[in-house]
Every structure is written in C-alpha cells, then in structure tokens.
Length: 506
Image (cartoon, rainbow, N blue to C red):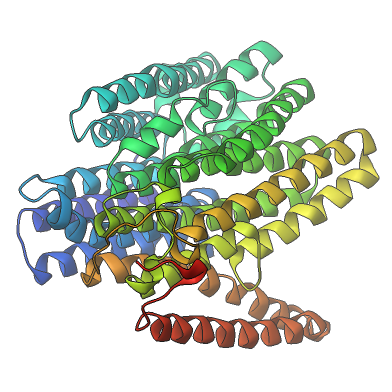
C-alpha cells in the first residue's frame, strides 16, 4: 500500500515531538521545559506550514492543530509550576502532555483510521485527567463523561467508518484522507446524519448531551480544564466541520435549533454560578454552541462570513478560555477557594494574573482589539446576511446571539469581580511568584491581541481602501495599550494601600 509523503511527514514530526516531550517529562529543571517547548514548537511549525501551503495537512487540520499546539505550549509550562504548588510528588505533567499530544494528533491525523485511534486515545487521557484527584465526585464526573460524551462520539466514529466502508471497502476506508471524507460519504439521510452529528455535538457539549461538561471541567486540575475547554471540545467542532457538507437542510436546522437553546441555557447557568470554574464551564457550553450555530448557518445558506465567524470563535475561545482556566488555578493556589462571592481583592496580590484575566474577559465579551472582537464582528455580519436571504432564520438567530453576547458580558464582569470587587467576607491570600504559572497565562491571554493584528495588516495588502478600517483600528490599539498601562500601574499603586473597594480591608 502506497504511503503519501504528507503522511510520512506528519507521522515523523509527531514521533519526534512525542519522544522529545515525554523524555523531558522524566527529568526536572529548566532544560526539560525548554525541550518540551521545542517539541511543541515543531508541531506548531508544521501546523503553520499546513495553513500556508496545504502540506502536509489541509487548512482545516492545520488550523485546529495550530490552536492545539499554541494552547499546549502554555499549559505545559503552567503545569510544572501547578504540580509543584498543589500536587507535589504526583506526575501530573506527564498526563497533561499525553493528553495535549493526543488532542493534537486528532487534528493532524491524515486518514480516517488514525483519526479514530487518536480520538479514542484523547478520550481515555481526558478521563484520567478528570479523575486525577481520585475522589468520589471526580469518579462520578468521569463516569458521566464516559457515558454522555465518549460513547455517543465513538458511535459517530464507527458510523463514519461503516459508511465509508460501504462506499470504498474496509481497507480503503481506513486509509481515506480526512479532506476526502465529505466527497466519499456524500449526502447522508436525516436519521444517519443526525446520529453522527449528535456524537460530535456531545463532545462539543451542545444539548441534549451537554451535561457532562460542568462537573468534568470544574473538578479536573486547572491544566486539564484548560485543555478540556480550550481544545478538546474543539474535537467536536472539527468533526462537525468535516461532516457539515454531508448533512441535509433538515439535519442542519435541527442542529442549529439545539445549539440556539444551548446558547441561552449555558449563558444563564454561567451567570448564576458561584464557583469560578463552573462559571467558565457553562460559558464553554454557550460558546461552543455559538460555533455550531455559525457552522450550520454557513452550510444551510451558503454564507461565507458565517464560516469565518465560526473559525474566529474557535480561535478566540481556545485562547481566552484556556487562559481563564489557568487563571482559576492561580486563584485557587493564592486564595485557597474558587467561590466568587468570597473574593474581591486579589489584584492586590496577583497583578499579572489580574491583567491576564482582564484581556481574556475582554476577548470573551468581544471588545477590540482582541480576536474576540473580530469573531463577534463576523458573527453579526453573517447574521445580517442571513436576514436578507432568509428572514425566518436570520431574525431568530440575531435575537439568540444578542442574548448570548449580553449574558457573556454579564458573567464576564462577574468573573472580574474576583480581582476588583468588594469583599463580603475577609479571606487571606498569598502572592504567586512562580513565573511558570503567571507568565504562561499572561502570554496566552496576550495572544488574543497578537493574532488579531495580522488580519488587519492583510487588509492593507489587499487594497489601500482598507486604510479606512485600519486607521481606526490602529487608534484603538494605541488607546487600549494606554488603558492597560493605566490599569496595571493603578493596581501596583493600590497594592500598597490598606483599604480597598467598598472600604473592606483584606
């Protein structure tokens, strides 16, 4: 059987990166971190190459693999400090790296059988990450994850392989390139398409199989939560993106309706949570549902801006949500609690994490100049197009999206209350000085701004008329940088004072 050069390159890079990272996990010190960063850097390099040239992966695989490698680089540094602060003597870092590498391999898989095998490996690694603390509540959350998320997704994978085998034969189906999957599957019946879509929706935590996520993300260690929410749920989005061309209008509209319900449900649930990690978990349910809605809208009505919005939402969510889950771990280490109502002064002790969380929440809200702003911009551009093409579809989606954005602003501000709100009861907190914790989060949150810049630079290269849009954006960038500098210096000044907002004395 002939092996494609692209497959050889992908497998070679994966093998070298796997060996480098896992070997580094057996050692301690700064050298091991450097080796791991080099391993993830190699994976990122082939992802960027794939997005630019279509080799060795197609653009879709390269895009998701790039996000996985970017988040994993931050998390692999973060977990080393987190393990020493909370789980000294327990090898969390190796589990996290196995988990991160298996997720990357899912997106980078060149053919169907590799995709299925790495998908199952990622699910198993995710289960052990969820139950890492070996308590009754984590075991229950892990069991729910297996039954509600893993089993439906595995059924969907088996169905894909079965349909491809009927078209090509079993041997050829196993080596079917992922980019050829829609062409081989062809149009699927409503029942079959909905069954496969529900499996991917379960992984993305879209109703009706969404309820595994809050406990799993809240009870897992913070680095595992960052990977679960930042990139693992994107496996479901990736699967739906591959499958969408094969789904008929009835299936797509059904999936769209379920995602709209979940957007409102997830946002409302996030708003009433008192635990910071559960707030972030329900926020993930809302955001992944918004991505699914955009994918379905783009496929049903042929709106290109809806697809662009979906992928921008994927990118922004991967960055700000992984960063915020890392932030929740720092909060827990510092204050020994995640209860929002018991906190409200932590910017005195955690100036850099407070800045990181501010940038991430601004991206969550869709405030410029973050990539979250571009995602929301393209979202509403696509919805306006939908109103012109099909008002009966576009108008309800505008209402649902507006509700979702409003709820995101509300619970985003609630999360920031941890750093800047007034105290309701006095708590003690400790400063977190470990740079692996603090600067891993900060670097990932700053990427929300860094990734948005090339998009505007590209506009200038396309046409000089784009300067009409670029100049205001440049002004916003300068204004935002000045605002962040003011906030940071203001925090440094207040940190030396005894009294705090509301007159509370921490």
